[in-house]
Amino acid sequence: MKRRKTRGVRVGKLKIGNNAPISVQSMCTTHTGDINTTLKQIHELENAGCEIIRVSVVDIDEAKALKKIKENINIPLVADIHFDYRLAIESAKYADKLRINPGNIGSNDEVKLVVEQAKDYNIPIRIGVNLGSLEKDVIEKFGLTSEAMVNSALKYIKILEELDFYNTVISMKASDIKRTVDAYRMLADKVDYPFHVGITEAGTSYSGTIKSSIGIGSLLLDGIGDTIRVSLTSNPIEEVKAGLEILNSIGLRKQRTIISCPGCGRTEIDLAGLTKSIELATDNLKKPIKIAVMGCAVNGPGEAREADVGVAGAKNFGIIFRKGKIVKKVKKDKILESLLDEINKL
Ligand code: SF4
Image 1 (tube, rainbow, N blue to C red):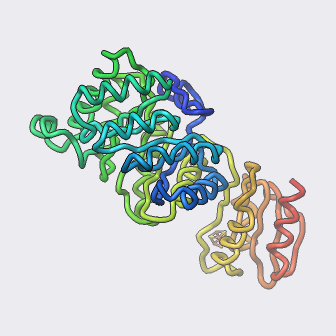
Image 2 (cartoon, protein in one colour; image 1 turned 30 degrees about the vertical axis):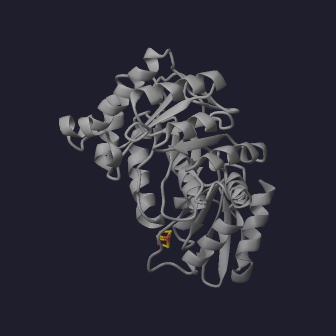
């Protein structure tokens, strides 16, 4: 897949843009000042595959708390700042990246102070434009449109560039897919900064994952997007899993993939239950194995011949196959165990 050419930005140990692998990020739901709880959540997210973590900074104590958080995690830390540029200035001492919202960070002079600090600490800034909090003058001119988000982003890019600052990542998010995707497509032709892409306020695990998959997926298929965040009203681990799965589905990340048929009148096993058990049992598998779970032995092995390994249900037994070729028949209660055995052999 041809990706948009962008400049590279370093966030701690990780690179964003310039053809670096697309990273998956999330945001803590904890109060950052509660350091232990925040660290616990970050560690859980690291284990789930999160590659960049963002935390909100709402006061100066939370900005100072970043120091201890940073010292005790293994992934880059981003400080999310709204309303008070002074928090950005303090956070820059400890965080690997700042996210500021141009719509509410303050005057141009205050933004300039933040930029100078980011320069001093050699960390990037994400200009995180959000349709819901655009500057007044931009709304007056463009309304709540994609153009407005692009205009806001360009305005702040200009401020940063005038200060000789190019260590920038851009995001422009709305809660609807069309305006978000249009904005990224528009800006993609105008600048070469890497993009953080996502749909904001996307909703619950179910609807939010669908919306994010369409929005982020459309952009990624266009070659647009250097780091992604799926925003869900849910445990952020769900965001990370969804993000990794979006990349996996498009072929931009190789990890364990489960393919399963929908089932029909020929289904001879508890297809949904078995698929769920296999998904859970192989959740931490690091190898990019394709596992098939098919409901019947008539069509299953053939239809899933692209899978490395799979199972097809038959009356009272299961058929384990590899690349469409039958390896063995096993009793119904041994299907999961035998399939895992076969996976281990791979
Ligand atoms: Fe039906 Fe078999 Fe196809 Fe599954 S694999 S949908 S059970 S015919």
